[in-house]
Image (cartoon, rainbow, N blue to C red; front, side):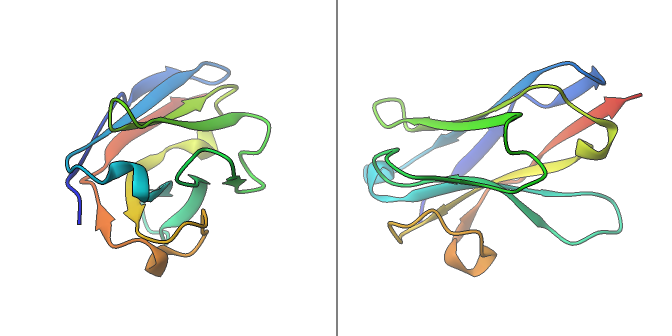
Amino acid sequence: QVQLVESGGGLVQAGGSLRLSCAASGRTFSRYAMAWFRQAPGKERDFVAAVSWTSGSTNYADTVKGRFTISRDNAKNTVYLQMNSLKPEDTAVYYCAAGSGQYPSRRPPSYDSWGQGTQVTVSS
């Protein structure tokens, strides 16, 4: 497992942008698929985006496709989520996750390490 710490959340107006970061500990970060999930109050944790080991493959939820971009810098042990054109319905706690599989899965059970989350609030 790896230790994950998210940052970059905050309050933003609709139409604005935020960039989330997730710093990982461990020497084998480059061997993990990485993902972002989010959970709004009273709702289940939903998949947002994922990226494979080498950034050769990405996967996005339909609700964020074209607005969010996931990327990773293996030299810095960090994964990013650039969020543009934010909407009030994007308001949630965003979680970073790491999984030992190569494929950027949408399924939470594919990931065995999770961060504590960072709050994103989008005002209308």
